[in-house]
Image (cartoon, rainbow, N blue to C red):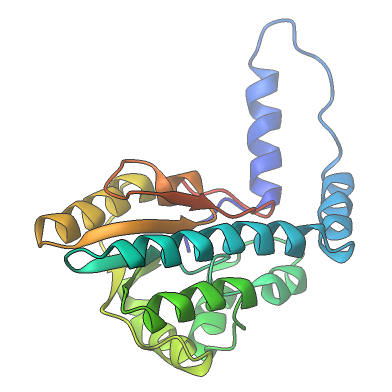
Length: 218
């Protein structure tokens, strides 16, 4: 998961504002933003929005699968789409610390985001193949595979991880991965993710955007 943590985002905005002529207004305090995010989660709004998007995706999968087609496939992102890293983020005050993240992935303890797991189950029950396209690097494959097995989501056609040496934006990498799937004959009927970079670039009949107030990937 290549992320810009909240703290670094705030610093980036401060620097950008400082460089803009005539802009002197102080940004909203970072601690205030963190409190807003925690309240959004604790009030249940985050979970309700996830459930609403997942229900829409589930309905579409059922409708589309009934029409049939060649190699029907659904693409899922992983982090904050199917795998819930919130406890890890809260433990680190929403900062992304590479060494701690590496340990977290290796431990394979992220729980499933339950409504999205139901979409996965619907897809498999209806014979739709599942492909995961994640921003996690290839070196994180072993922990990722264990985590998917632990949450009962290990019946998939492919787990596509980002090459360890890849430095480009996630949007380009994920678009290229979907293009390869389509060129191999797969019909990607849905693409589900929490970032615009998961969904942009085409090669899917429908896209479904989950909320993510915690970080942004490009």
